[in-house]
Image 1 (cartoon, rainbow, N blue to C red):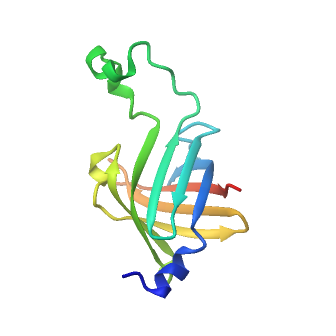
Image 2 (cartoon, rainbow, N blue to C red):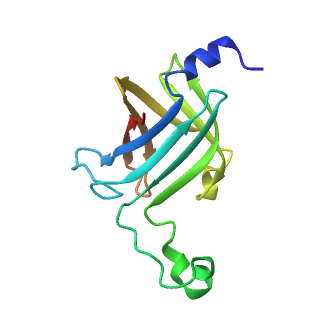
Length: 151
């Protein structure tokens, strides 16, 4: 059963959001745009605790073969490059200022059923989500996604 507190905590998130920017920063180094300068994406939150996220590079190339046969032709190897997709449940921890996404379906199998913590801030119709993770070298990488509420 969903409590009134959970419904209240989720209410600012509910709706469709479009991706404004996706940046990553590792230490004092310069900011990177892993999906290019103008990524495309949608983030959908429902009132009953469902989240769906789809984001990609704007300049992804069309496949030269039947898209359903891409794996057989060898073109499938890079399909996940420049694309993030998952959906599942979400919860809001107001005390920690976090939204936690728990994917049940994901392009990246390693995310399935694993809590994905994002700190959040709202400023008018802008939602900023920030996550920090270690990369292969052990450095902390901060990912910042800025979303604009769609009307």
